[in-house]
Image (cartoon, rainbow, N blue to C red; front, side, top):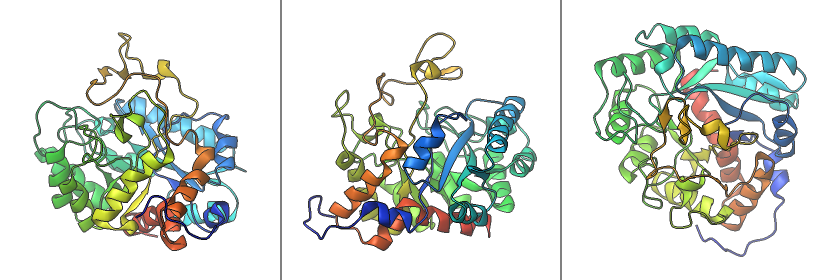
Length: 341
């Protein structure tokens, strides 16, 4: 795509309002402050995290927290157990909440626990966070081993249950084996191109192409350390963000990319400190070669600024149909394939 193509003016909000707008990773807590932001962004659905480093019991508590939040806001929110729920939310001017894991610690050592969490509403399961777990290696682990035997069992059970395999934060060998093992399309809900930003958290061209060949979708991440290390500490722009979208779309097509901003509206640095005061999540500090220190200045400042993404796509020459796909339709199609209905 040409970054500054001169094209006829089109209404970004009108394009956005004629399709589903779905952020495939909105890294927020359940709190009332996010509701007006989501409304201003004309967002139909958000994928939220109910577990990162939590084991079974703590994940149950976090999931209950989101369920209670949805229950308190019946006029605004609906739990997305199916594609039909997302489509219904759009028609009823509500927001669909998609539950997902960013790790498989929650199931501990028993694949049967996946069924429990599916019944609680979880529909997206990331295999690892940054570190090694029982399934395989994360992307910042010092080794690059593939799936364990348990990991293969987990993928087979996710396929059987109709839950989406997410390869964000997953080590390269583990991710590529997961793509081969899975009988269903997979996703990287919030990941970028390593060729443009050299960090272990981003995807190699090989993995990007393999996800696309499997029929999957990659959500472009707005976390500054995954957009550009060259501009670290400087204000990033929508164009910096869309460079990753352009690049990945060039490898696998505009029908295989979406939005997974990883925005942290309502969170602060304190939310990311380990018990020892290091920058991280839970017990695990972030490695500095993959995660820059605060402040984290996103190219997409907040969810209410999503029309800016549409305007950037218009400037780059994407058609209205491709824009609607990128802003949500592509992930919706993937969900229908994996979840059914």
